[in-house]
Image: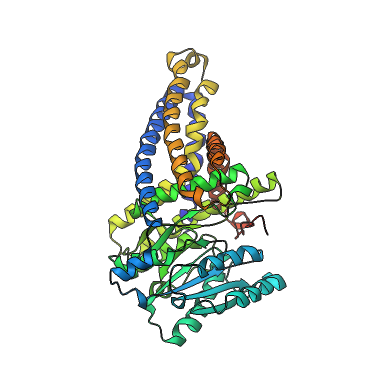
Length: 492
């Protein structure tokens, strides 16, 4: 397995250092490569924009639908479905937890069908116990079932973090809220949400409908669209841009379900969760790993069903501008640590002969391409086009190719900017109604900020991804542990 952890980082460094060297020795070759690479990404951007437009339209349509009425009208057997909702928390402000529970209580869905677990950590101390007690006092009698759990510290083999906490809570929840009531496992959908996640009122209606209509309901994960809008007006502009770009990336992926992997808040059938042993308890990227656990366990017979329906979460914050930037960088590096799944995928797919070869090839390439592009493409597109003219010899610098290089790359980048701007507009239209106090003038403010996207892609995209992949290569003490993203609102 260790050799597979070297591949993403090694490929990125070989590419970047190789282009620097060749810009010095063979600048003409690098120029041709850069132009072809930029053209490839231009075409890919417009291809992805078509997917974004489809996902945007479907999501807006779903937001206008009364899903409970739709379930009742179409005669689906939805009343048998129970939703086990798990919210892991660790030292979060009470107001963050309270608002998430308030959104569950306000759902357009029968509360008796919802079983909710607040999963705290013992190491959260008195503060977490006080928050849990206040939540139980306010919401304990609202749902069909309610449970508080406290994940013990220091369990051998566990990494302190979300995965170990939610697995502890899920096991207790199944025992206390499902099995003791005799609820069939195949009728239970488990939703695990970051504790700042606020569900839109019809989330559980959409989820029930998608589950009942799915071709393989018990062999599918269910993924909503994440909107980082809870505190968007209070965040620094770089964090807002990352929030917007993350949302429209998830929109585009939702319209390509064959490539969609679970991310952050998601839902999964209980039988599958039990079959794979719940979420892994000793790694950082448990939210995406659960998808690959199921893919391996069911011999490739697993997929993610996009819900085309949003949940809203907090964007990264900090007490000062620089603290916000530091927190944002650490969040993106943690997300990029998902490259550890490449090694897991290679190991488990290789040894499982029951998985079709085309499935192995597809996921091997999809995973590699995704993490490789994450750590290299922004450097190549926005910076490396300058290298031949900086490092090349005098003969090259006096050539027509050198003279036209900035003009040709500039034309391609300007055309790409059109796609980015349109994506920004669509994301704003979708998110704006869910931002408290959003006014028309804010459209202009946020759109102007998108001019900074090249910097965002480099400093909060490529660099933290390369950092994570390099740490994975080095191993040992360089490996990342779980880091809790600060979640706060103005009132907290």
